Image 1 (tube, rainbow, N blue to C red):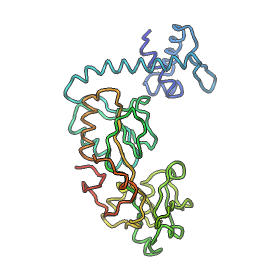
Image 2 (cartoon, one colour):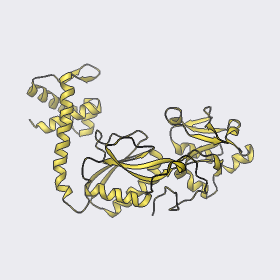
Image 3 (spheres, one colour):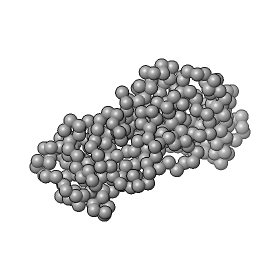
Image 4 (tube, rainbow, N blue to C red):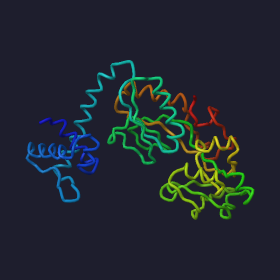
Length: 323
């Protein structure tokens, strides 16, 4: 019996939610997953998982054993990484998590540059608007928008995340331009579905806060879908600068209400502080900070919108990577 492998299988079953999902994750058969769990239960003389026809759940003993397995496997990974820490050249697999829009527009190009410079490194880049659990999901580093409240993480500040309101010239010729946020109620607005659940962007209307209209004609869960709708002249869009910058620079979209934009939000590159970064992680952090690094925003700057022209490339305040 390979105890460590069986413990790894146990952890995978709990975190993946099923034998089948764990089998896919570990690239073994479902039968083999069941065999590992049975061997553990026979060896320990205790039931770890309460199984039914539809699902399985942890027993009280299984819950305690799962937590111990996680700690043991983390210690094993730490011991194995000692060899890699002694090497000067970055190598091995680097797992990175980033928000979808920022990751697609900015982080993915930076990852490509990084891989061209470090040929022995492999990267698993996960684009998700969820907050990755660095320890639980085995993520080496993550890009996060907003304040970082987890004191166990090292947080390197990057350039702030700025929003832009824009519309196609064809839409504006037909409907005119909004002069203040209150005018949005008379316009066709396009909205991101996430805003209705956990994110609100507030516009400044002469000192009063105005929310983006909730009765949007089009709601989409992906910014690029909203961008295409705006380019087609469907309505007004509020999206990150990094997504719309090239369309604005080329005149395909025109900026609106620039003095009323929501305050920029801080962006950080975060990674665990309880271990010395491996060369692959240390070099990646240097790479990202060199391209996007910025000092933390002072409170006064964070409280007001940016009044500036949008730029593509490496201009000040841009979150576009250096190429």
